[in-house]
Amino acid sequence: MTTPLIDPFQRPISYLRVSVTDRCDFRCVYCMSENMTFLPKKELLTLEELDRMCSTFVRLGVEKLRITGGEPLVRRDIMTFFRSMTRHLDSGALKELTLTTNGSQLARFADDLYAAGVRRVNISLDTLNEQKFADVTRWGRLPQVLKGIDAAQKAGLRVKINAVALKGFNEDELISMTEWAAERDMDLTWIEVMPMGDIGNEDRLDQYWKLSDLRAQLAQTYTLTDLPERTGGPARYVRLEETGQKIGFITPLTHNFCESCNRVRLTCTGELFMCLGQEDNADLRAALRNHPGDDAPLEDAIRAAIRLKPKGHDFDYSRQTVDGRVSRHMSHTGG
Ligand code: SAM
Ligand code: SF4
Image 1 (tube, rainbow, N blue to C red):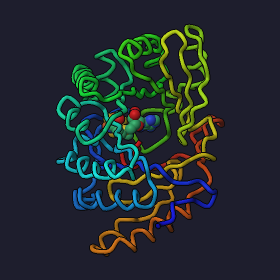
Image 2: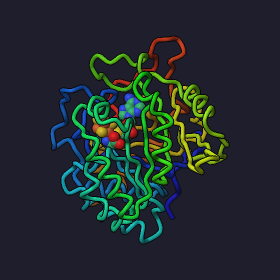
Image 3: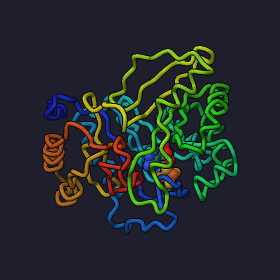
């Protein structure tokens, strides 16, 4: 029996988020600059290496895998990787295989994802207005994403919408987006904008829409019931009594969720980040590439990394400057 991964603060690590590419077909203003330089292909883990890496984590007790990026569905042959993870679902070792996507490629891949064992997807969508959508994603087109959402639901995937709360941008859509999601039987989670990476001229304090304000606005229209549910992450949930729908709030900046954190993040180059808000990371790619036929050094490197998982993050907007800023982009670490 392998001993499961427990960090120094007695938190069991059961959730791995994996970025499979840093590339994307959109250029969302809060996530990327218009002219991004992406990593050379040889830096990326190959699909076989991703399989070995994830399989090792599953062997060490990871039960939930979330595939993200960049845009995971623009990575060539990514379905091969999803299909290779099906065996861990079949064996029962892996309880959930899921992904976060911008939805642009879902019309093509929804059926294949379902066949591979995916049952839920998070789709990022910040506005239902075509022009605003084109503005915020720079390269994205709303109808394509709406088609993707249709395809996902038709394939049998449960869809959750993730929207970044942006002051002066989607404040006026709070109720219309809630109603739209309710009509389609989709949960909706709002994310507070985080200070990650250099994205050009945008001023993050201008974009910052406090979710406690958003929640108060929502409470003017709906009856909110707090749900006890905890996912080990920064999300808190309420139920809207009028629609029955679940609304999530991801507030990494204003909430202390770290004490129950059960997750680590693997970048597309094989660095393991033990905390989204800290720069500390471990290079697992070397342990993997230097020992092609032997997973023991990789297991050792993972255990050593988990022993370094920090107690919490340092993001802080309270002094009106962005403290605890992290230099890497969300598309690198995987959101
Ligand atoms: N491309 C996929 C997508 O957009 O869903 C997956 C990767 S994306 C980095 C994951 C999530 O991070 C998206 O929901 C996106 O809106 C969110 N995100 C990106 N940059 C962010 C930031 N600076 N603050 C808060 N959320 C951010
Ligand atoms: Fe691409 Fe997702 Fe970042 Fe938007 S948020 S640029 S879709 S990785």
